[in-house]
Image 1 (cartoon, helix red, strand yellow):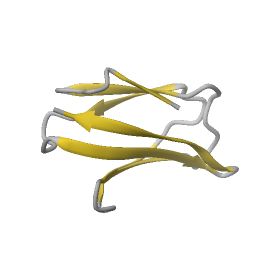
Image 2 (cartoon, rainbow, N blue to C red):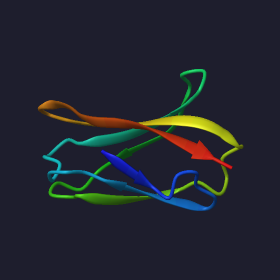
Image 3 (cartoon, rainbow, N blue to C red):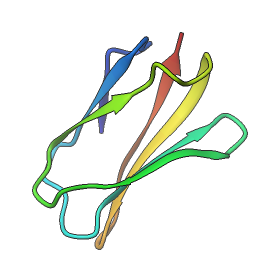
Image 4 (cartoon, rainbow, N blue to C red):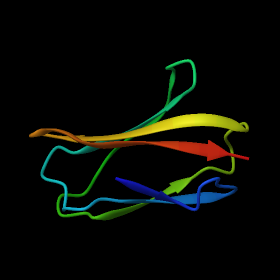
Length: 79
């Protein structure tokens, strides 16, 4: 799972090395583990755009899971 730009200001892109399957979700949590965003992803997606302009500055963890389990996880810095 890749995230860019990192650190991010207004938007970040999530790149997956393989397309997600049906039932995939993207979850973004803050440094305390609180979920700040969760979205259902379109099957076959390999890139996803995250709006980050409304998030406070800090460290976030972005996790993508699908019906096969964990697809990937990465840290994102919002400045």
